[in-house]
Length: 114
Length: 115
Image 1 (tube, rainbow over the protein chains, first blue to last red):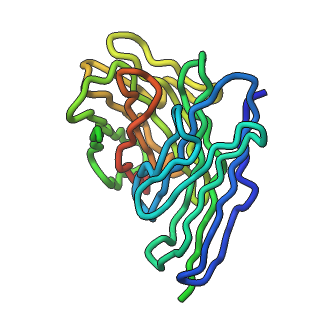
Image 2: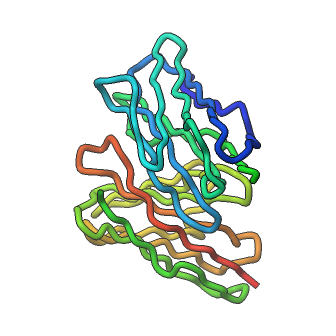
């Protein structure tokens, strides 16, 4: 079965500290991987995506993620977070050969404390 | 990047009335659009896939007679919540698939409150 897992429902961190938000998937076919951020009462904004090529992907707002095929992971990282990074983060996976409708993780709430 | 708009951004309606939400792709043609519902503190739940010129495909458990979807043109899909009830109150988000079909572009969402 194809699935996406975000193990951490909430990640608290202090400002200027590094952070990693975890995303794992299960699939027997090739995948396309996405991270989205959602601020309160707003839609989803694409942070970064992996479609092919380099497994290290850099996105907006200083975020990056690395596609690890052997570990079926696509963890999101930022070396130094800001208060303004407080938001909900969703990992999404599209499975090749299918309908290209993404499967979303349950989301991780990043809470940055001053 | 591609832009998808939604209108209205928020709406309050009385129980029993119908509400229409519009989703537009502003700078590309989208043969396929998607409608999601998001409950508080929850992930997105796909409601239906909207295909231009044909009937929408609804996910299991979604009432097609209650949530009417029309995709009359390559840039516009509409979701009409008919005979709305308080339990229909939610955040509704649409998205449009890029022409290659790999990526989706999301609208800003519509907050529906039924009183």
